[in-house]
Image (tube, rainbow over all chains, first blue to last red; front, side, top):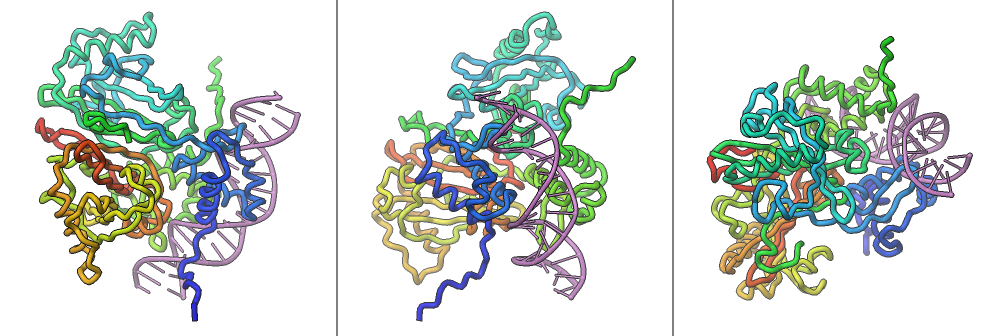
Length: 248
Length: 248
DNA sequence: CAGTGGTCTAGACCACGGT
DNA sequence: CCGTGGTCTAGACCACTGT
């Protein structure tokens, strides 16, 4: 006789909920549509609000939902592909570049960056901050670090000039260095308070951390740490266009 | 008179906790050491266990902690760098390859993969599963999809042969196709139940999803979807070794 | 078996966005 | 001002790991 399945593992409620909600998103909701609020959803599924929130959290992590305090929970559009490796593999700030310079300064780098640059922790480095937008929404914030010794032609930034102007001055000077190659690493992180603000997210929200090392003369001449919104971005690498394929 | 700072924004407790714990990890604990259990930590900081857990969750997300049910919370070693782009940019399964074939079959691909391959949703594709280890720990699980029509020399896998043998047969046949290029995308996801088991994690834990498209003859001949543990891995790309630098 | 982290509940109050 | 999601509490029970 047909025994029913063993049901060896009782699936957690929030996991089951996530499946139900995910299916509902596919079949009953349009992108941008606003879901019922959390209290009502929880009541409708017969669970505590905290349990429902656990399911929503996962769906948001996967880029299916977007939650905004004071507004509501909406169905997210598909993730946007953002090209990480520049076509020309050149210095940042080139012509075809959707980054926006914000400002620049001269200060000691974060403790995690100094060893990558091979400088003493207290040594001053130029720090350029930029942001990147896609479809009108901010997707990334970046800090670029260049030891002052690498850019002898650039003086300490003039506080009188505007932030973007200071940033552009450093990027311009960079372009004179002979870039030999670059090197990237991607890992998961969580947004610091300042980054979160730029990305229009809450502190601690998941981000993809892209660390780029720029190689000059066999050494690391600059390091960029870019913080991409993990919920809305898919980072793309490689040469699809070279063979005439649309981006993945 | 010196007014104290305005304290405009009351920092959430779990955020402050995370900072305290993070500092303690740096100064008072060694890698692998077991922390006090959650109930005691919560009591020690004077917060509810749920609040403490929120802080631990973030530290785990950042790869600083590792929690195992029935065991405890330990201080995690630094993330391991895993090279994602092969040196030769060749087909998978080459000589210098730390992937382990698991098994292979012939079935319809997942709904998300069929459009990437440009095949009808029901069309059978070879599916090769592999896992990757680093320092004796599993770091990734991968499914490689190749439309049956691309590999006319390969018959339906023989159920009598071992799983790894079936997988190697497909990988061997792949090597005869002239690979033109490849293309990658990285995004955040959460582990499905089967992947979680292979990665020794719980379902839903955060993973880095790497989608590779293999280009042959101007079209996509194969697609690989690899799932890397986000807590323990840093994905590396590029050519650091080409210029004689150690990996980031 | 005892002890760990994982799930779940039913409340409360807060910070923020729009009206 | 109201309604939203974000934070927090104080409990309870469950699933897993080791001994």
